Every structure is written in structure tokens, then in C-alpha cells.
Amino acid sequence: MAVVDLTLTDFRCFAAEAVAPHPEGLTVLRGPNGAGKSSVLEAVYWLASGRSWRTSARSALVRSGTDRAVVRADLVVGSRSVVVEAELPKAGPARVQVNRQSLVRRGAMADVLRVVLFAPDDLALVHGAPAGRRDMLDDVLVGRHPRFDALEREVERTLRQRAALLQQAGGRLDGAATATLDVWDARLARAGIDLVEAREALVADLAAPVAAAHRRIAGPGPQVRMTYRRSWEGDLAAALAGARVEDVRRRATSVGPHRDDVDLWLDERPARTHASQGEQRSLALALRLGTYHLAAADGGPAPVLLLDDVFSELDAARAEALVAELPAGQVLLTTAVDPPGLVVADLVLDVRDGAVVTEVPR
Amino acid sequence: MYTGPLQALIDELGRLPGIGPKSAQRIAFHLLKVAPEDARRLAATIVTMTERTTLCARCFNVAEGGLCSICDDPGREPGVLCVVEDPRDIVAVEKTREFRGRYAVLHGALNPLEGIGPDQLKVRELLDRIGPEQVTEVILCTNPNLEGEATAMYVARLLGPLGVAVTRIASGLPVGGDLEYADELTLGRALEGRRPVDV
Image (cartoon, rainbow over all chains, first blue to last red; front, side, top):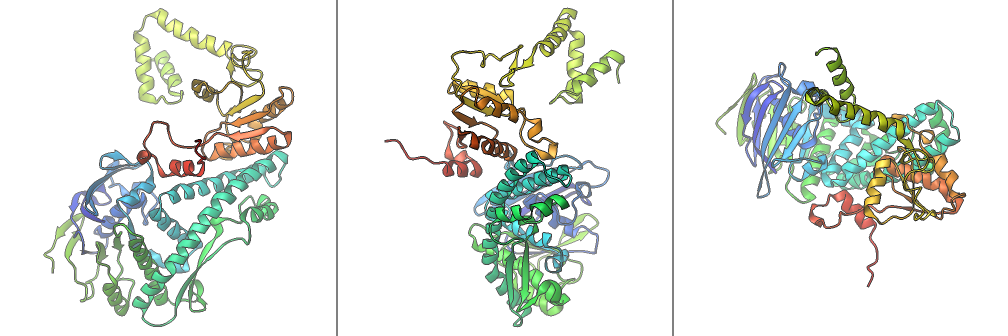
């Protein structure tokens, strides 16, 4: 799949701008910091996922002085042409249309546009909080099958209902509250185990492509391993029951899919605490590239690869390894510095102050 | 902002569900133009409705004093109860003409986020009917969403020890529809609930 035409209206710093990336090769977006390079990637990412990795505030996406942004993209999916249009008001729900039909479920978007992003913040995947690693898995799951979108929302809402009940219980459970908690626990156990098993299967599938990508980026050296770590042992329903007294006291759910983690290892060292800065960078990039290769191998058109400001994060050797690693499909890459000499761009776009100018491809 | 009474009506209408400020204004201006007796009739209808409509003493359906028309109907089978969240759901089930039993309206579903627990629902009242009405089957007809499913499970657990058959309505495909237009969730649930073919 590829974005062949992207029109941004009142999105970030762009008043009205059209961008035409190379349909099946590497497009380099070049320009000084703050020029709007990442915003182009952000628009594509928003279409695919309905959110931004840079901000959770919708108003930040809308150009100041206006009250709504519009992002429109002409896509090529296999042999099909698809038009996606999103209207993002400063407040209130966004409206997304695919071929002029309203998008009812977010998960359906994966059929026409999937992206894999690597951004400087991705180092947090290695050293940061578990939520980032869980979100990474959950995002990939939605791309794999739309049913995971509904499952993730069910787990999330059940957890919120359970949390509300624990708050209302105020540290003590009477008979009625116990009976209702039983019901939410049963629902959480059922949906939770479905989600966790899907995540575990995904981690197993990701292990090989991530390790392979890591070897190519970092060269021979420590072997990367990934293991999914549940926050409980045995049966989830039994674990919820076992943790109940403590959960009621603390008014929080202490076991379940929302407390799990993915452990990353370099040989026998836990990467979270023991990886050097450089190793963290290689590992974060390997996670994203591994995800990309898995998605491409899952069948269907390959996702669009978005690389935001990668060269600021990588040393020369790793940058060269990354360039050699770039897949054949559509790649959008932003850079404020001159890319390494090895980068053969199919198209270079100069981004300056909310304007995008096409350069002659090299 | 308009003169006192007009603005007061716009404000009142705007508090109704599904009516925004623009609609409230449009309705108010429409009422301004209608004949005084029409306006009076509308006002009287609303007052009469609120004064005369009560909840059925047995099933908590809307009624006009005492029992609702369904509970009052001697042709209804007392042994089978259909549990719904809202009186409007009764109308939906009645349209099928498939159900000849009585109803029990819970007036909501378990939803801790909105502060709704068992005490806010007519669950106790439902349980109290099982013995006296010699109920043999309870059909749980709550909505097929998270809160409705949780409510169904909650009620089913309470009914279990009482020795009645408890069933849950099936989820599946709309009749007369096409498979290709079904969403994956519904189709998945329909597959889960598949049945042997009668031959």
C-alpha cells in the first residue's frame, strides 16, 4: 500500500499543502527543525491509527486560528485506488471517510492503510514503562485482525468498570458489591485471556524478524530475545480472585493484561536496565523493522514505513545498516541533517515553513 | 437571547434528549406560530402523560395505574419471563409476536462508571417473582454490549440456585441480509452460536 497524494488543510503548520510521495520507493523529507517534516508523517500516521504519536491533544493538530484540520490521501492498495479523508475538529469526534463512506470501525482502516513508524521517542520502547511495549503489541494486533480492535476496547472498558466499582466500594465489599465484582471479574478473565494469548502469539511471531533485523543493524553481537511476561500465574479468574482483598483495599486492579510486560533481552542481560544508549537505539529500530517485516509477511500489501528523524538517533554505522535494510515498498523518511551518502532517495522533498517543494530526484 | 417566556421554553426543550440548542429554537418558534388550542393540547397531553403513567406493579413496564396491559392479559403464560433493560425493549420483543410470556424490566444495566449497581436496578423484584408466579424459564434479553452481557451474567448467577431454566438470546446475523455485509464481530458471534441443521 502507498500514499500517492496527500493534501493537508489547516493541519499543524500547513494552511493548504499537497504532498506527492514516491509511490513505491524512498521519499526523503528534508528541512530545518520545526519546518513541518514530521507533521507530514504525522498526518499519514493519524489516518492509519486515528491518533498521533506526538500529542494526545487534538487541538495541537489544528493550525492555530482555525477550528478544524482536513487530511486527505489518495492511496494505492494492491491494484485499487482508495481515497481517505479525515476531518479533525479541535474538539469533538473526528470524521473519517473511506471512498466517501463513513468509517464505522477504526479497525477496518487496516485494510487500506497500515503504517509502521520509527520515531526518536521509540527508545522508550526499550527503557520506558511497560505501557509503551503493550501498546506496540496491541497496535500490531489491530493491523493483523480487526477483531482485536473490539477485544482491546472490551478489555479496556471492563477494566474501567471494575476500577469504578472498586472506587465505589471504598475499601469494603458488601454482598451486592461482591456479586457484581464477580461478574466483572468473569468478563475480564474471559476477554483478558483472549487478548493475552493473542499478544503472546504475536511476541512469538515477532521474535525471529526482530532478531534478524537486529543482527543486520547492530552486526554480530548479543542475541535479541523477547518474552511476554504475564502479571499473574495460572488461571486469570483465579488470580483475580486471589488478588481481590488487596485490590479492594488499593482500589485498583493488580493483575490482568494491563499489568503485563514484554521483556527484551540481549543474551542474558535485560535490555531495559542493561542496554547502552547505542544498544537501545538498535533494539528499538529492530522492533519496528521486525514489525514491518512481520506485517509484510502476514500477506496483503506491505505497510508504509515512516522513519522520523532517524539519523539524529543513529551513529554512522547503524545509519548505513538501516539504509541497507530499507524495504522495497513505500518509505517516508524525515531528516534535518544531510542523510548518509548511501541513501538513494527516489524523491527529495524540501520542507520549509509550511511549504513542500519537490526537488529533482537523484 | 429572546424575551423571558420564549427563552424559558427554548431552555426547557434543550434539556430533552436528542434536542440541541438549534432544534430547541426551531421547535419553540414553531409553537409560537401554532393556534393557542394546539399549544394547550400539547401541554395538557404532557401533563396527563406524566400524571397518569406509572410503572407496572409487577414487571415495571409503563402502565396506567396498577398492572400494565401485558401483565393484565390473562392469555399470557405466567411461567416464562423475559428480562429487558428498558420498557422500549418490550415493544421491540412484542413486535416479534414470538413471545407469549411476561416481562421483567430492570430499568438499566450494571454500569459502575455511571454509578449503576444492582440496587439501582429492579433485580430484587425480579427474584421475588420466581416463586409466587411459578416461573420455569427466564430469558435474558439485555443488550448484547459489555454492560448488558455483565447484567445478564449477574442475573443468571442469582437465578441459578432458584432452579429455573435461564437462557440468553442469541447474537447473530440479520435475517434476509447478506453475509458479505456482516461485520466480523457479529459474524464471529454467529459462528460461535452455530446449530445443527434440522433435516
